[in-house]
Amino acid sequence: MAARSSWKGFLKLSLVSLPAKAYTASASSKGVSLNQLHKECNSRVKYKKVCPEHGELQAEDIVSGYEYGKDQYVIIETDELDKLRTESDKSINIEGFIPSGMLDPVFHSGRTYYLVPDGLVGQKPYALLVRSMEEKSVQAMVQIILSGKEQLAVLRPLDGMIAMTMLHYHDQVKALEGFKDEVETPEISDAELDLTNTLVTASMIESLDFAAHKDNYTENLTKLIQLKIEGKEIVQAPNPEEPKIINLMEALKKSVEQATSSETGKRMSTSAKTKRKAPAAKKKSV
Image (cartoon, rainbow, N blue to C red):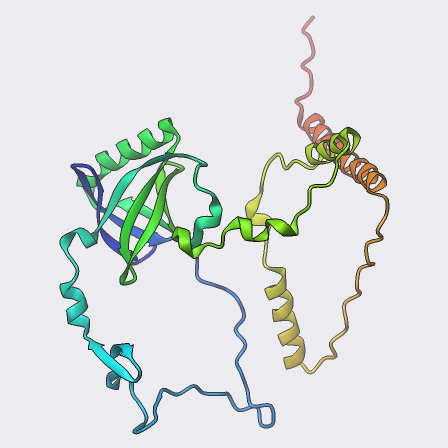
């Protein structure tokens, strides 16, 4: 478990309230960071906070302000912001429940937290809420003050726990209708649809091994950096052949053949392993 929670407060449903805390679900990024350098001397480019009248500033010299007119600002102090917050700001308030799948993932902002009970007193109501959400197959719409601002989120049961995913507000997501003129509605024959359905069925993933997916770009970038450090020549990777544009039905038929062949191979391999593991038949006693 993470050493420090990202949020602490109360999870509230009507008159039921339980102490809770949230941990960020995302692990620390293992990506490779590249720095900006001056092209001529390779010195690192620095970014300084500068006042046009007094030059470079330190962090303690900077305050927050809102521009209400041209070059006219009102200063907002941290303690003034704290005065605006009430005790309810420390709570996740469940507004209500929706059927699982009702909210389209397009509204997900990409940040997810694991919400857990904070202490023994919250364990029972937490377990009851999780069990009920699982049995009713619902998710909860909530409001939370996080990172200094009010945010919308959805709670969903996840393997006996609660996952909280932050949401974009409706006006923060571009309307789908604005892009519909890019998509036409061509005529589709029954034969084309049948072949496509067959291809999708043959390409179904029976058991998703999500951990097998990895960041190939970062891995290759790391290799490139090491080669550069060692002073070795960088060899251009061979480019794959450009896909040939052929008849759609012909492409579907060949794709189905490949997918079916691959699926048959997997089944034969699995069957062979099962036979090898099968216990030897016992000899009958005479």
